[in-house]
Length: 175
Image (cartoon, rainbow, N blue to C red; front, top):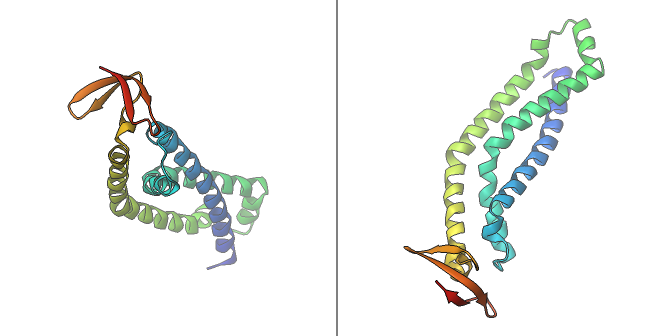
């Protein structure tokens, strides 16, 4: 591998990982925001929330990788252009296609890894994620019922005006 290939690859990878981590955290926070009603105020322990995040994280990988590759490519080649490194490459007789060759190989490897993640890891993670969400209701059934609104319990819809007690497991004015 030539020095130029190493330089382009290292510039791309450093930008790719930094952008990828930031986007990953944004998507994880969006997932927490989507499911906040299921996990907030349920008196869940830290391990349960960690499992929740671990099972949710493979679901966001297929969304994060394309954005990370796109932003890292734009930022890397933008920096090369801004610092006149493309002009130096062009004056040395290196074409743009030749300069992009190591990145094309790297992106093909990333896409293969993304395929195996989406094909093998993501379905199992999605299954465990759904099972974990259902376990919240089984461990703390009173949490499935919200005060002041209709809640589905088995085949019935019930409305509870007030929940009280030490664990909010006592119900008042059930319709």
